[in-house]
Image 1: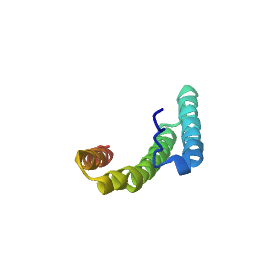
Image 2: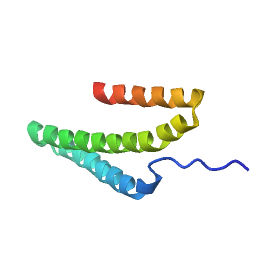
Image 3: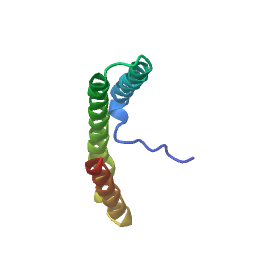
Image 4: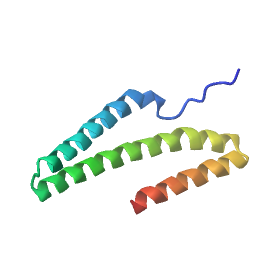
Length: 98
């Protein structure tokens, strides 16, 4: 039987889920604001807050990935180490561009 992979964020899974549920609520609030034809700047302010919240989750996940997956792969060495480093570098590049 294959061993279940434990990702680096597992220790903080509940906190991540709470934050993502809060962000989901923000998205519903944005929909409601548009539906109710609220002032543009108020909507943009809420979009900025939601964007920052998503970035915070992304940075936390990236930190967990580096501390767990990349460190473990680097310790093991071989091709997997290079793949994990490339994967992390690509993720950082996507975050910086967004």
